[in-house]
Image 1 (cartoon, rainbow, N blue to C red):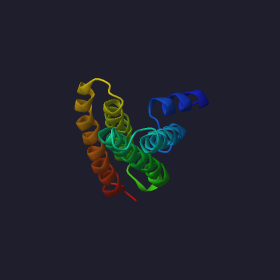
Image 2 (image 1 turned 180 degrees about the vertical axis):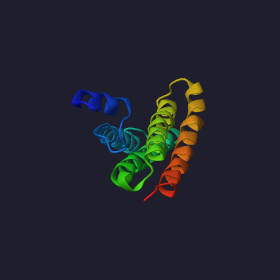
Image 3 (image 1 turned 120 degrees about the horizontal axis):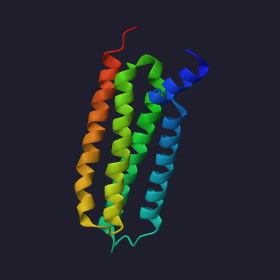
Image 4 (image 1 turned 60 degrees about the horizontal axis):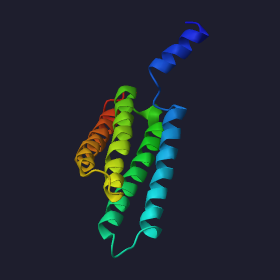
Length: 140
């Protein structure tokens, strides 16, 4: 393969340890801190307790799964690449859908957004199972 063919192949099949994963995890971590700070300092604790709870939960899950994506990047040499890539995509989908649904509820966006949260939560669960598969099926 030529250099340009290698580049095209890499673009078609992003690696488990690519910079894009690190950048997404960093962005996701920043958003989680912003949401947590808004919950702690931008809302009335008594009048908006439900909204604070939604922001807090979304923030925690988003931060945790930003770290999970980074962990997969760091452990990529010890994992089955296919399962690890699946885990990362599931963590990414969950990191978008689950917290976004809760943030939307907290900001009084349409209530149907709440129905998206279980899809994101399911992606998180499947991501953890895929990560287990990545660890258990690695051939040394």
